[in-house]
Length: 128
Image (cartoon, rainbow, N blue to C red; front, top):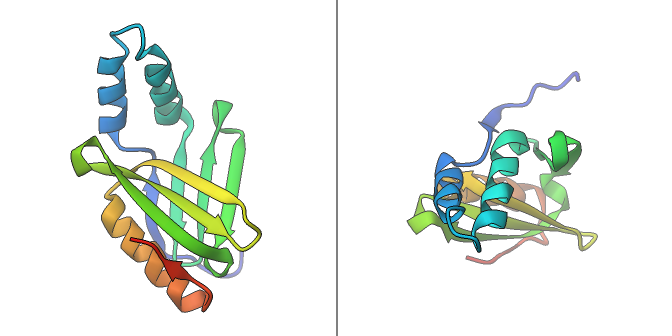
């Protein structure tokens, strides 16, 4: 890759997501939530740079989505875990939805992403 990218965030989901869901997993109803949180903690990775968003996840980390900022038309954030982490839904020009779950520092990350999108895509519509 000839062009250097400045990495804003690289890592996995917020540890609080795993802890909360493991506690919920102590109940019968919470077991699927706990399993989902374990899978996210083990295989979900985010890489947010000044050029793109890369999300690697799925079973054994086999799914990868790369999105450049000019393709994004909408970003929505949802706080979780009393606001310590959050989820984001990113809508692309082709209608595809990319969900990012349990993002640490999601408010700052949201601001960073929306700033990059606004600079690259005049069609962008902010939904706070």
